[in-house]
Image (cartoon, rainbow, N blue to C red; front, side, top):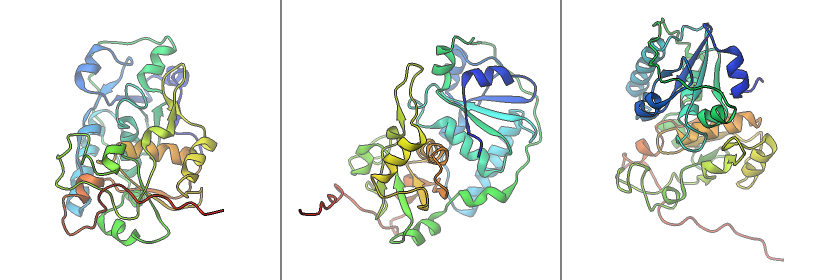
Amino acid sequence: MPSVLMSPAELSEIMGSETVIIDTRDPDSYAAGHIPGAVNLHDIFTYLATSTPEGMKELSEKFAGAFGAAGLDGSKTAVLYEESMDSGFGQSCRGYFLLSYLGYPTVKVLHGGLLAWQAAGLPLSTETVTPEPASFPIDPASSELMLDVAAMKAALGTHVALLDVRDVDEWIGESSSPYGKDFCPRKGRIPGAVWIEWYRMMKPTSEGPMFKSGDEVLAECASVGITADTPVYLYCFKGARASNTYVALKEAGIKDVKMYFGSWNEWSRDPSLPIEEGAPAPVAIAAE
């Protein structure tokens, strides 16, 4: 399986009419300097989705329109980037996941983001790009990547690993979200979930934070009982940090990875859904 990740050198070689580069950062950051030719699409990060049929229809229509307006027509390679792999809460990877869900054929993530691009001595531009709009093709064949509430409820207490990758204050129920401690009505986690904070999929390098190697990612997963053959259902707050982890797990060769994109923002708002609160129970250590 070819890598989703692309180096700055690789991107610099293929830039042109057959590539659409998408900057997922906020408009001010984009205006201050971006990869030449890049289109700004910050909604990739900000959009809050629900997993109801109506919510998925709205998401599909919104992003088919947005990606089409950015120039993606099915034949061009989409390349997404953020500031660095750990500073944008996984927003470039969220774009990768959305495009994969919509069935777009060729999608890449700039490994290391703009920080790695600059570290390679490559140029920036302040010119606003006006792309040529295109008709974006939706192929629903990849829709099984996206889990809804019913699928998550059905997975409770099964052999599926429910992997929570939120920051530690959210995992232990001190905060409900990155938007504020009380942004959601309930704090806690999905019952039975295991936890690997999303930062653990990356490590520092001279070009900025980068994903760990496949073996290193598998070692992190082994710490919570996940192997390459374990079905993994990912969630975070809104599917961004989980998208970062999705890319790391797929790159490491974990075969069956799906995403609950509605994540805690949706789950916590339905009082009929079970949650675990407070500090998680300690892992039992066998006596000698």
